[in-house]
Amino acid sequence: MYPIIFEVGPIRIASYGLMMAIGFLAGLYLLKRELVRRKLDIAMADRIVLAAMLGGVVGSKLFYVFFEALDLALQDPVGMIFSGYGFTWYGGLIGGTGTVLWTLRRHGCLDLQYLDAMAPSLAIGYFFGRGGCQLSGDGCYGVPTDLPWGMAYPKGTVPTLERVHPAPVYEMLEMAVVFSVLWVLRTRIRRPGILFCLYLVMIGIARFAVEFVRRNPRVALDLTVHQWVSIGLVLFGSAYAIWLRRHQKTLS
Image (cartoon, rainbow, N blue to C red; front, top):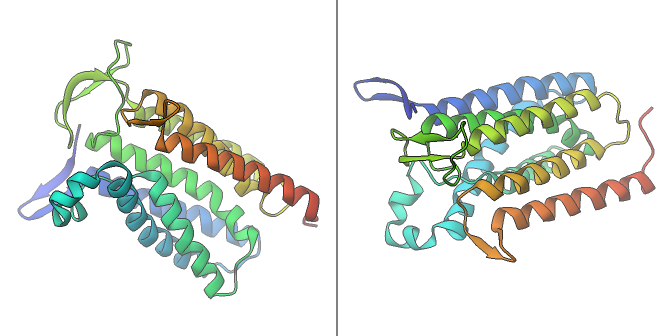
């Protein structure tokens, strides 16, 4: 594992931060392409990504604190806030979605086509984010396994000498599939909002599945908090897609 990619004196480049930056840049590039193709305001791309970054970071940290590490946060709130770990993807999704919707509304662009344009970028951002988790060994790995592809993370941010499921790699593979499907269908689905609904359903299924090998505690019916959120995303995405098909016309 390589928690620190580059270090000279006080300058340290962390692998997680580097991969997150690559993810945001890749997402920005794809979003701009999509906004141009859809004849939407390309100036919104930078505003959307900035809003997603701010809301995502704050939301991911708050979700982790309240649902996974409240005791640790109460013992050392400053250390928890400024730690380099403790970021949850669902918290980032919720926080980032809230700030992006607010930004779109503030600029008079609260349109489902913007959400559709964002869907592939979100998948690619998730891909690189999990790449950062894998490189840094930040504890997102899974439970012990004797499968041949099991990995140890002796030099990780949260080290382990046991061979465990490389859950970040699993999620990267899932996001590669999600991105490919969205990228192919983005020019074929003509009804606004359906592509974003498909994204919600697919990521919900993907995260629900990988949680079975993650180390997160079960909270109800032998499911984790993330699995319950996943179920909510699948149900919401499916129901909203059905509503859109019944009440909206396709784009010409």
